[in-house]
Each structure stands twice: as C-alpha cells, then as structure tokens.
Length: 440
Image (cartoon, rainbow, N blue to C red; front, side, top):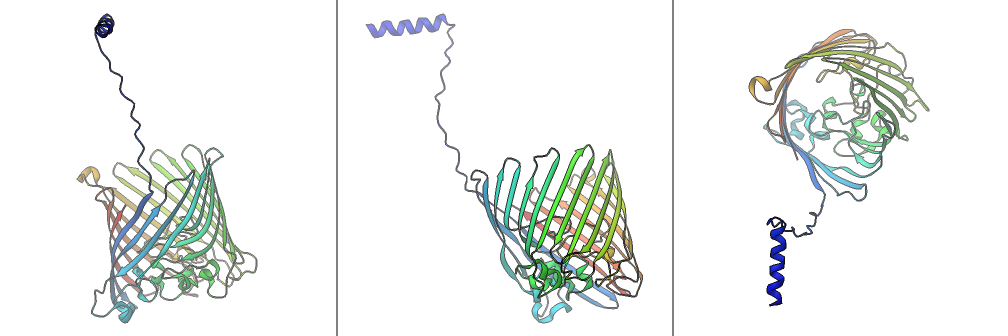
C-alpha cells in the first residue's frame, strides 16, 4: 500500500510539472582510441627519356619505382620521434642491365652510384615542441634556400642536422640549424663526374662520397675527400608582419669554406606579385675552396587573370675572381634561383645574365579536372669567365612544359618536357618525364 501511494505521488508530481518526462541520459565513459602513431610515405614511379643531338647523338631512358615509408610516434608531452626508409629500384628495360650498359642506354638520375638499386634509413629523428619553440635532431629532410632536398628525380637529398625554430616574436620565425652530413639524392648522378658544372648546379666536387644512401661530411660533399669540416651553421629570420610582404634573411657559415648570405622579399598586391633575391658568398677560415667572392641578384614580376597566371624574371651573376673563378657555389642542393630551367642551371655561372618567362593555365573550370599546364622559356647569356667552358661565351636556351594532374587527394600525375639548346656549345637534347606520386 505504501508503494502504491509513493508511485501515485510521483505520477502526480510529473503531471503537475506539465506531463513531459525528460529522462536523464546515463553518462557513459567512452575511452579515447589509443594513439599508436601513424605510417606516412610516398610511392613514386618515374620514367625519363632523353635524346641528345649535336655534339653527342644518343638516346637514354630509364624506368624506376621507389619512394619512402616511415613511422611517426604519438606525441608524448611534445616529444615525438620518426623513422623512414627510402629506396629506388630501376627496371631493366633494355637488352643489357644498367650496370653493364652504363649511361649509353640508361639515364643515371633514377639510380644510386654505378646504377645501383638501393635502400637505406633516410630519416630518423626526435622532435620536441614546447610553447613556441621546436627542436628537431637527427636525419631529416631540409628545404632551405642554400641547402635543400632538390627532389627532382627519384630520391631527394637528406641531411643529419639539429634545427631549432621559434615564433615568440609576433609575425616572425627564427631558425638556427647546424648541418653535419648529407646523402645526395639520385639527381646528383646525372652529372657523371664532379666538376664546375655540378658545383654550381647543386652538387659539390665530392658528392659521389654521399651517394647510394651514404651520409658524408658536408665539407667532403662540397670539395671531395680530405676536406672534413665542422659542417654548416645556418641562421634565418622570416618576417610577415606587413600585409602582403614576406621577408627572409639567411646566413650559412660553411666552416673553413665560405659564408653565404641569402635575402628574399616577396610583395603581393591584388593580382600582382613582385619578388627580389640576392646571394653573396665569400671565403672563411682556412678557405678550403680558395678565394670566393661571388654575387647574384634577381627580380621577378608575376600576375594572374582568371585561370591564367605568369611571370618574368631576370638575374645577373657577377664576374668575380678567385680559384673557383667566381660564380655561386651550391654544393648542398640549394637551388632557389628565380631563373633556373628544369635542367639548365647556368644562371649561377660567373658573368651570366639570365631571363625567364613562364605561364600557367588552370584547366579546372574548363574541364572539371584538377589540372594545370605550364610552359616556360629561359635564356642564359654566359660570359667567358664561366667555369664550365672557361674562355668561351655563348647563349644557352631552354624551353619546356610541365603538366600536373591531381587525380585524387593522394595521387598526383605529372608529365614534363624540356628542350635545351647549346647547353654546352653544340650540345642539345629533348627530354620527357612521366611521374606518378602516391602520398599516404
């Protein structure tokens, strides 16, 4: 009887409250899914075909697949670590193997040294982030103006370095890095033998010491065996505190070799973008590269109208003296020049003026596809003070195209072509590349 009365009281109370019963949702503790870190990487398949004419008459082509796969740990109070393996495998698409026929039929830029297939641990680092500061220590990829990945073929350049960055100052990023060793990506092998061309095109006189996944001292990469140094110390200030204006200043102190200053300014106003860059190099310490006294400057102006965009750029490298005979030395893959071609990098030769024009058309509105097509032309007016063909002056030219198709969020397809004339006096070629990148 007491139970019936109690139920009646509860029912009456509910009815007086308006008759709506709002049940209380039970609180269920749902544990978050455990974080095991993540797998990342890129699969790349690359075909290249080059046909020489003029001073050399030959066709060479290669097909390779590879890329990298890595693991990044969960965040432990700001601390993470990562490891990644890189590799390339070239297919025997001719009657003879690549290591037998050599460069006569196979293009070397998709392989290791001596047309090797190889795999190695390219990244292994720890990273610690706290407040506005980040520290990264170990094997890693760098993308800086004068030391960078130069990821133009199968595998990029990679480095052993310590990198500290900080954003405490509003609109400003400060960077301090020390780089001790480098492994040269597959692009370096296109030069065959080290010399003035490689030294001023992104690869030093000793780059062969760092091929096929071997990490070599930065001094050895630059100048060859017996030139071990204390590495390269770099500092940078990146500033974006003025609307439309980006400023960056870098200083690279390559111990006992040279000091390089790199400056760049980019100003965007509506559909117009104006840019300028400057490089100065001078010898330091034991001056293992001899006298270095080099300057390069460039300007670029670009605009866009609907789906069409384009730019024009001009650069000059001074006529300076010294054992390197002037020119800008770029032994560690840094290739920031506004006026470089797809393959021709003569803008860093001493006493050289370069002009480049390029235009890009975005076909997305017209076709519904995420497709862009670029065409370009570069002219290099090379003075006799150059180190590639000392005492000769000539004009080298390069035209080409670059078509990019983003098939899916992960899959990118690319078709590229370049047509240098008088790369060296009397040496021409046509080259085509098909590239498929799948990122995960």
